[in-house]
Length: 275
Image 1 (cartoon, rainbow, N blue to C red):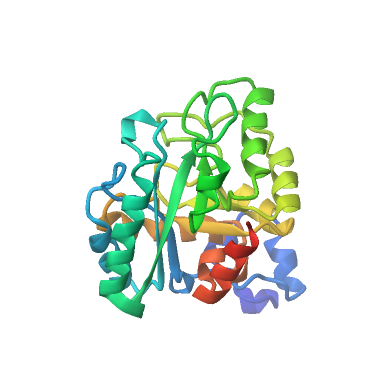
Image 2 (cartoon, helix red, strand yellow; image 1 turned 90 degrees about the vertical axis):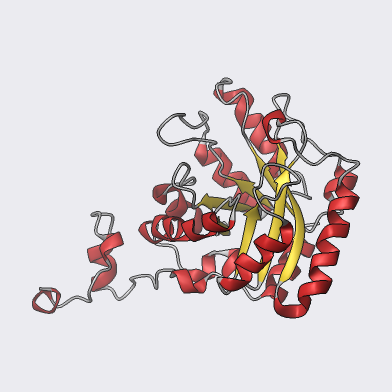
């Protein structure tokens, strides 16, 4: 059929009548990201918050899946249901990560990160001096999602403007099918992300898939780097990555648009440049 029409084959994920035929005719179809392009898993949890297995077990599971980098991004303490990492615990967690890193050697790089709560008053759950010491920082909305748009947007923008925040995790905070996302003005959010250079996450967890495909396409059109992660709380949840890849592919995302397809040195250089 495609030969009869005189156009290249169009991947099924693009068949949404969103300009794919015009792109095919002009030779501008994207080289869509594939599961094998992922080199790092940057959003996972351990028993330091609400994860199910040890840091070592998570690292071995990531290594088994061919990843070169694993970030442990446990919750900060104010999200009470997760028993997050207190300020007093951070150095002890670092010591455990260092011990596992020494044991596993250069087979995989383990980063100490955090999923820091964007609190209801707009502040972040850790002071800047603590954020600066972490290898990677996600900032996420989990609470007070029904605040008026202006108020919750200001919370999000405060986080995006913090130089120590690298990624906004599952930006709208939605849980499918139980909870709608926050009433965000995504146009303003994209404009801020483009200006600050921060990354936006596509959460591969099927309860989130956030940002969605339409927003992912809009983000890459504005030069905003994406990150695709599983938010894994167990080794088995690392296998959810394909859901995030599917969402990204529907959003015309290529590997070059996603920070965890990069070689470790490039990823580390980008993180260092974030402050």
